[in-house]
Amino acid sequence: MPVNRSVYEEIINELGPRGVTLVAVSKTKPASDIRELYELGQRDFGENYVQELIQKQSELPDDIRWHFIGHLQSNKVRMIAPFVSLIHGVDSLKLLQEVNKQGAKLGRPISCLLQMHIAQEETKFGLDKAELKEVINQLKNFSDNPFAPIHGLMGMASFSEDLDKVRQEFKTLKNIFDDLRSEHFSGDPRFTTLSMGMSGDYLAAMEEGSNMVRLGSLLFGERVK
Ligand SMILES: *Cc1c(COP(=O)(O)O)cnc(C)c1O
Image 1 (cartoon, helix red, strand yellow):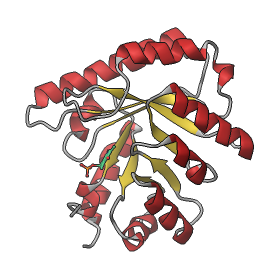
Image 2 (spheres, rainbow, N blue to C red):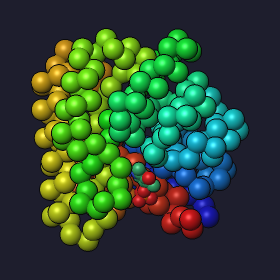
Image 3 (cartoon, helix red, strand yellow):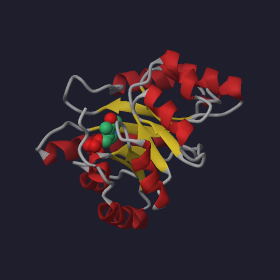
């Protein structure tokens, strides 16, 4: 399945002027697809599975910025810690502390996004507002996690035809992001990233304030698994 080059160019033209970063989600797709986009200039790629990410990272150029966007188990952080660029799915204090521990061992700060649960579906991972507050309170001051700096938030909207609902969920996430930044991260220039929007809803996400979108099927075609 070839990469959709013209769609890629269009998306880059849409995102670039707005300052939105494109993460090309390459899960289940072969390294050759990634290389094709790489040759067009794409550097940020997103993967969901640890083994698959490690395999691809070993085959592909070193200047790729790998985003881990899946659900990450604490016992696997160690495996991606040496090279991962941004972990989007941090949804517990335990996981954040493990990232910090592995980063400290390597002397390499590993950037994290806290994942918020904004969809109505039960199945989506992430923190609710109360849990976010708890994580933030437990961190007390942010020198607790020098090797797992928090760069912002990530969320997934409901898989729904109802774009009003989806838009409302993005609005909610943007509000949480703004509040958190002003209340807890106002002096921290790293807290800037709001990762929201996928192939089906990224335009709405951008309108609601996203500055990082994660697009898979639009670029690489539908996934079989
Ligand atoms: C798979 C995945 C995407 C990309 O989904 P598409 O609908 O193919 O664009 C984005 N974010 C996360 C967290 C994913 O798991």
